[in-house]
Amino acid sequence: MSAFDDYIAQLRRLDEARRSADEAAARTATAAESLGQRTARLAERAAAQRAAVDDLARAARTPPPQRGAAPPLSGDPHADLAAAEADLEASASELEEARFLAHRPPWLPRWRSDERNGLIYGLFALVCVVVQLFVLRNVRADDTLSAILLAAVLIGCPLGAFGLGWLTIGVAARPKIGDEDQRLERNYRLGLVLCGSTLIVACLGFFS
Image (cartoon, rainbow, N blue to C red):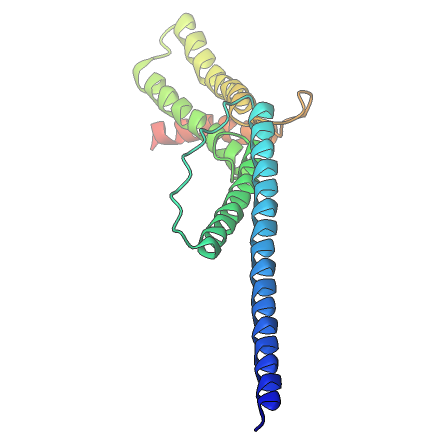
């Protein structure tokens, strides 16, 4: 091989090395640009999510959650971005859950209204039965006044239980976020049946 051919071969090797270096630099720049784009996108999502949390807390008339300290970086940008994306996805799920609960009653929010109202009426009806049994076993209708008192207690207890249940539902079933004029489902028929039946239950318990 002549000196000229050797020179040409050396030029070709240098040109290939230069192209390889340029391609590596381009790949590095592309990777760096992708990391920057992902970081910017995650920052935008985090800002939007933080604003949504503050808006929800304001609408629910509750203080916004405290901001925790950022976790330490691992030094691997890809791993850090993947962890940040996972945290944002988890936060988005929790935000949706908070939105759902904010529009539900604060007490037993996952229950249906008839289940929750039945429990409330049932608790007051249980207390009513205890009071009625106590009155039946300890008050004797020996005179007119005692008979009137006995009848008033036996009839008034179911009405009082129903009224207290009605008022309790108005407090326990009102969601944090909702229209002030929104009509609450109180299941008054269910309440009348549960509270009114206490008189029969008490009489059966007394005579049994």
